[in-house]
Image (cartoon, rainbow, N blue to C red; front, top):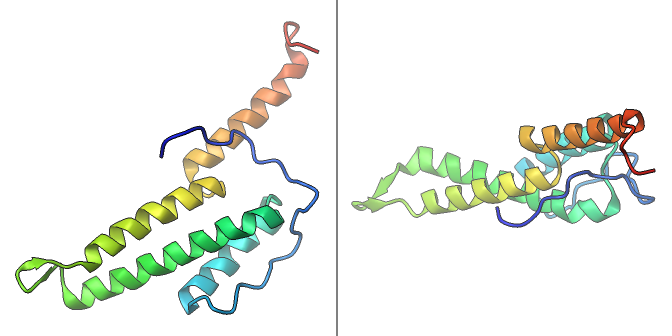
Length: 133
């Protein structure tokens, strides 16, 4: 993914404190992922804000699409009528979208380590005599 990623996720004044209900139109897989991830973001990390709900929605739709495409590939196979199954493209695209959205929400190991490094470096500034006050 190109561009700069946010280095720290800062809870805002609109921090969501309880797991919000998933949108009604989501599939069963998407709703289950919504509940799982929203719980992590609200109770364990306390970083979900109202502004993040669209990103969470994108993430869970991508994950649900990925799972559905994977199930379809298992049923119909990688090759259909002598050609690559078009569902494999849907699977690949949904995997990329879910990974991108997961990173934006701080759900990947790399995103968590960036946030941890930023937290440590901001804590260390207090002890640095050369830090700008």
